[in-house]
Image (cartoon, rainbow, N blue to C red; front, side):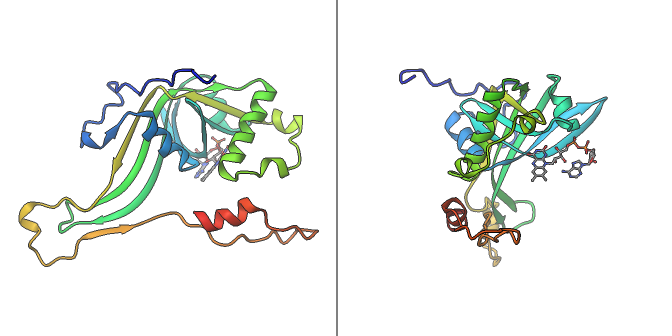
Length: 224
Ligand SMILES: Cc1cc2nc3c(=O)[nH]c(=O)nc-3n(C[C@H](O)[C@H](O)[C@H](O)COP(=O)(O)OP(=O)(O)OC[C@H]3O[C@@H](n4cnc5c(N)ncnc54)[C@H](O)[C@@H]3O)c2cc1C
């Protein structure tokens, strides 16, 4: 709907208020969504019988919800489907911050931490739409090229979504922050930028017909 009001920014709670270096904390949707949308791997934490587990998995965001998926047989998904509390984190490492002391050496990063309870998407059409959104998020334009998903595949896949409600972002940028007296020391200091890069596409040796490399694969290599 064109005039639908955007949800308000996140309100820090006892859990999400950034206390250490609080100036790095952000609660606006723009920052949180930009961090989430820049990646597709997160870590989901949950407890089974008093034992914490933290599982790496893929995710994507649509509106004010974050999604993840996997085999319906997955212990992680079966457990979280029960509506237990989870904590999802997504992180990007942007650089090594080399200070003039080990103490002030740091890392430039963007991270989001979201707390909540996930819901299972039971409606098949909604599930398929969500999976399409995932494929399109990672490789725009690919869904239409794929063999259509079967109902058996949909049954074997669990898709979860969690409302982004109790959320914080924490971001560090910029050069080292050394002690004033250390700036005069003859020690090189600065930032070593880091980013994820991709190599050229590697065709599957089992390609049986000549198919041109699609744009989303070629562009992926060029743009990331
Ligand atoms: C980058 C990345 C992306 C992934 N994306 C997805 C996804 O989109 N969907 C999905 O379902 N799964 C994904 N996985 C795999 C995921 O981490 C789990 O292995 C999977 O979800 C099965 O979970 P489970 O609880 O059923 O595992 P189980 O097999 O029941 O786990 C049993 C034990 O196996 C070990 N184990 C399980 N997974 C891992 C792991 N990843 N690394 C080390 N040890 C492990 C742990 O000790 C765990 O306690 C991804 C993994 C990575 C690293």
